[in-house]
Length: 376
Ligand SMILES: [Zn+2]
Image (tube, rainbow, N blue to C red; front, side, top):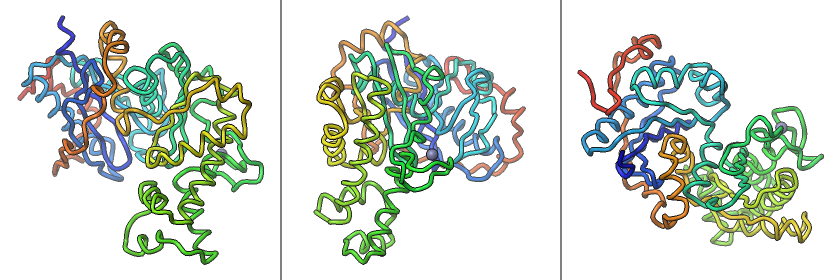
């Protein structure tokens, strides 16, 4: 079989919607669709926009002569690995316990894989991004919460590592704010987006001058990007937030490095991706908290695949092993960088009868063959 026409469909489910992409053996996104999330709906209606986009993608790949090797989903939550279904997805509880892989395999006749988003992202970075060539790779992501994943010799380390998947609850400061888990000083309470927002609110209550206030009053939402822009302009409150986050993240990464002994630490996610400044602060904080030996032992780099890490990583197990192996050594990073979002096609179908579709029907109604042909 010619591997250059082999592709897989990656689906990254996030709170606001799902990105569906056709990904080739070199980790390149060839085509992308966006499916909106329908909030508070039953499982059938929740999945329907995603499945419609998957079907559009399969039809596209068939028309273009690609061979689809399977479907890879990533979800923001935890999984039941034995039953191959989401266990707890806080932002989309309709998915909890639903036999997603069984549904996909029955409906499309293709192998399906399911990953936690951070696990998928670390696989993407290992094969096609900043982790290429490293044996022990620790990936840390800071968004709404802090997540981590570890790859050793190309394999995800899961249950064997006590704290992997729960790094956000490793205490970093004994006197920090109380966390939802009941403890004080978890990294989540110190460096997540929510934590950064609270730092800004405290500065505002102290009456500090900041251009952030002007932007927030102009109906802009608080985001890492907004904070990064103001930090670059020299806003003292934005810089103060970055300094504090950098300090805590430095302390946390020193702890993670001593626990997991990675060769490379990759930092990703909205908070870390918004600004190079944070990376610099983390590197300098690490010098404070760690020995010189540790600092020389590990490289700290930003995620190379940007926001597409989980999307691309979700299909890694489906791509031909030989090709992926060869790709790791041969493909220049510039060639595997994700396409810009200008290619994004917004797709929000109207589904008047979506609620009428039962999950049993989803499970037993094959609509697309293994070659990606839409059936009537
Ligand atoms: Zn906690």
